[in-house]
Image (cartoon, rainbow, N blue to C red; front, top):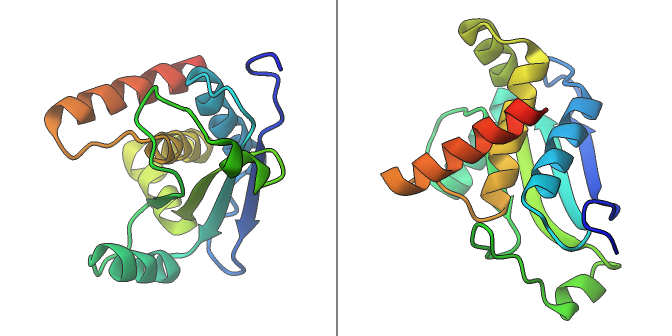
Length: 162
């Protein structure tokens, strides 16, 4: 299969009453761009949940011990390292030939507020946060300065190409 031609599955779901209606095509385009740019050799699956502040705050409290709303949270299903993507045949077979990367929760309310605060369009802010989150699913992090530098560089490269 030619790299970049595989069929990735990016599922998006809006929670009723979550605030702004984020554009699903922008989410899919941004996620797909990361997968292409990172050169994943197999089709991947990502679930994106567009929620409100209350739900993302609950996830943040439950899984990160932070009692506050945030813009986005990523829950990787694989333990990947940036640039090192070697899925097992078992991972692929168990999921109908796609590699499940994980789940992303985006607060529509935070995205809308941040876009206004920074002066970005809602689409640009959505794309940036999706790129950030998919990079987390692929093993990128920003906990230490060197990792943060690498992740920020990839975010800027990818958003620049979009």
